[in-house]
Length: 212
Length: 229
Ligand SMILES: [Zn+2]
Image (cartoon, rainbow over all chains, first blue to last red; front, side):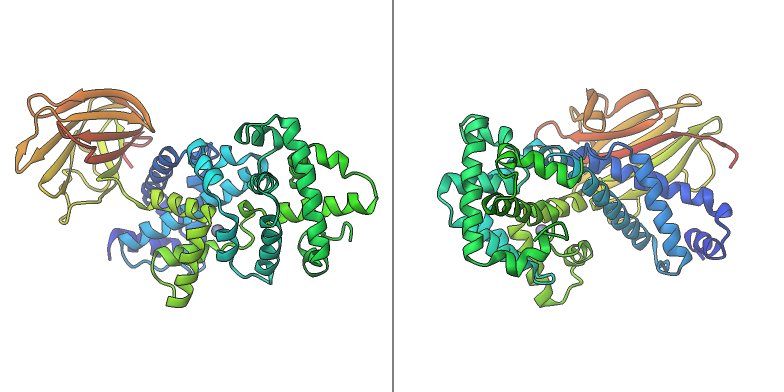
């Protein structure tokens, strides 16, 4: 039995305390990887690496306890920790994304690439089908693509989470001009959606039980 | 900010224009709600993260793999998450965590990305020792990092890059914390020494005299809480 096998057997017996020093080695490994990825990928939304590493270890322990993790070798153990670290990190990113603009979540450089390169058509074409959401997404995006160029661009950037004041410099217009343009774009879009019966087919995805 | 508040802020002026119960105002609000719901950042039409992972690890059936591939090509958000995964999954040339304490150094974890054969470490497991040496090879280059306990809470780092068995002179070695450069040195008499490095997380970036960075080393130094453990 290798060291790790012995300690995992201890964990499976519920003897977590005995395995604690062994577990510390993997805490250092996970924290090190998170730290590096944070620096390399500008994860400034991850403010507490040690807390994230702790969550990874807790999930690892759960997996050992309920038999979802069976030790094979060192590489497999590290692979499991890396994948778990990714899930934990991405969940924290989701939380940040609900509260912060795109640039704060992706970092300036990557956000810029997304804002420049995001293609409505390509995205709609590649959408995954989950409960017919894809069909509705396509219908909506096709309606956006039918708008005149400037109105389409305002809506494209709105879809990526930008407010009019953030759109303004990208379109070389004032924030007010963008707000007006966006109003007209939305009015056009709303009319198109009504004509194509969008709400009747897809309303359940975005109207909730508030109205409609 | 809640989703609703955010949507309202993003809506800006037209939210006010769209207030009220006229059919036009209601239509406008609904169009905005649809845009919010189908914003790509919400990942509503993205593959599950489990499937993204299964795809990079090549454990998806062919048709499914093709669907994920096509999606990632059109979705910058999934592409970004996969780049995040790569960053986590790609080990540096050498990665080690050591604890420094009264009894010397303990190697907590180590891994070697490039070397085909296990690198030598003069100390393994729980026993403490004053010195640890880590080695990793890639092609004709070999990197050696020697760690020496300098005090109860600091250590010395000696870095040597060798090509075809001989030390590379004038190789540059940067000591970083995260991406922040702390010190940059050039090898003379075969190595670079960073003295009295306190506990913390460090990266070493190694460059031969000319050319790109060849190696990145991650060293995590912890103060040994219990040297007798
Ligand atoms: Zn996606």
